[in-house]
Image (tube, rainbow, N blue to C red; front, top):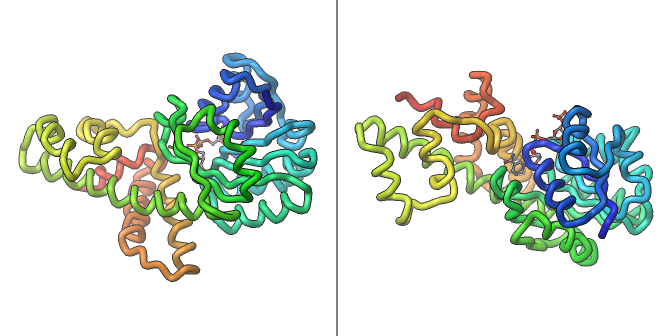
Length: 288
Ligand code: NAP
């Protein structure tokens, strides 16, 4: 079993770390708001540390699931960053969704310190993290991904090695581009059915088994109908991810007209003060 420093105990990180503890790994956990890490240790065991650098000392693997590029840079390369103390040969696995540019930079920094680095963004949202059934797309060297795989299997059921450093993040952008359009489609269909005064339960029963079926429809149709937008995948994160994709598309020449529109729709929801609500809150900008 491995000694693992796990940084970031949010919606996704806390259950992922729980699966690692249940698999018998020895965990040291770090979180920006320490109370969350103390509560996690109380519930699942392991050790608390206030600093990534301290948590990473002697670790076989450091795993991060924080928020943005800035957060990942801070916990790895910052003043108290994990890269300062990770032993040669240790694994670094980042499950945050960040730019491919930073993922490549971390790979270069890791190489110079003898670390094995994997960019490993996830999809499956909160239910996938809770049930340990996430899909993980990986970028990095073959050996790094091979060593990371048995650890990541504690909370995932599909792990795909896409290619070199940063390609996990680029694949995740493709995931978010496809997903954003589907959420909006489900929201528009729901509002349309409501406007036509149809029984939305019956409409779901009819259309969720056919060509319009989707994970988003299964997981969000009824919640949208109830105006229940708690938990799940926040609008703030959707806007971050669509922004990453648009930035990448500027470099690779892809055209993302719908993603650009979703970026603006998310901005409207953020302006309502609802950025932490689930992306199904996109339905809120459509008149009832
Ligand atoms: P979250 O609930 O906001 O959790 C992020 C956690 O990281 C928080 O507990 C936060 O601490 C901690 N953190 C942030 N910066 C830190 C730092 N500098 N040092 C230590 N801890 C730090 O976010 P999440 O929903 O779990 O998402 C995490 C990542 O996974 C994001 O990149 C997101 O895009 C991606 N993701 C999310 C989902 C989803 O459905 N939620 C799905 C796939 C991918 P505080 O307690 O102080 O806030």
